[in-house]
Image (tube, rainbow, N blue to C red):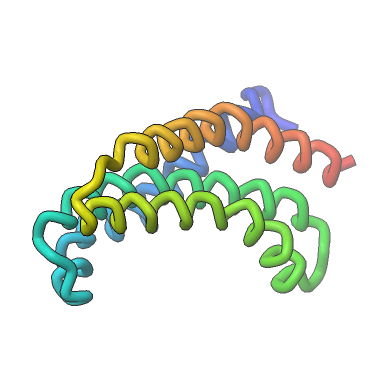
Length: 137
């Protein structure tokens, strides 16, 4: 395909995608929290969970896109592939914000989200690169 490693190319494209689409959401999250009438003490948790969760969702989406790259109409199959993988991230982020509202510790949920981020950074580009190699051949 290219003289460069496909792993790093996929990782770089995911980073660029997250910088364009995920980072603006993270940066305006306090405003979103204010618009949703969340208490001010939960804004920090909302910011951190979005900072940990949006890259995971972007990386999981890249796996789905790489798996469906050869299909003509891939809208529904892409949703069927990526939605089950994204639900744990959404649950952990929601529960972390809920724990903040209840006054409980949220360290466990942040640790889970951090583990999901590290796993997706290391494994999602591998899966995407493998799916792209298969679809090219």
